Length: 81
Image (cartoon, rainbow, N blue to C red):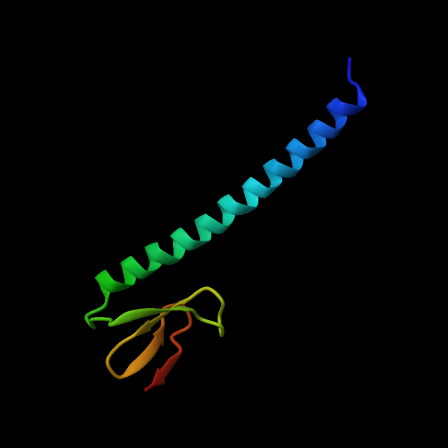
């Protein structure tokens, strides 16, 4: 037997599940970025000084900072400092 309270509760639970799915996806994207950063730091001969963020040009590359430039791991964007 399903009353009006069960319907509201089910709706609220569905919303909570969707919110949790979105949070999981966001964490997966962050983890992917950190994994990419780790791979890049192992495969490149250059020592990177720091992680600047996600490239706005390509949207998926990681911007790394060296002593004299910024470098995107996704689209090979470079900017000299």
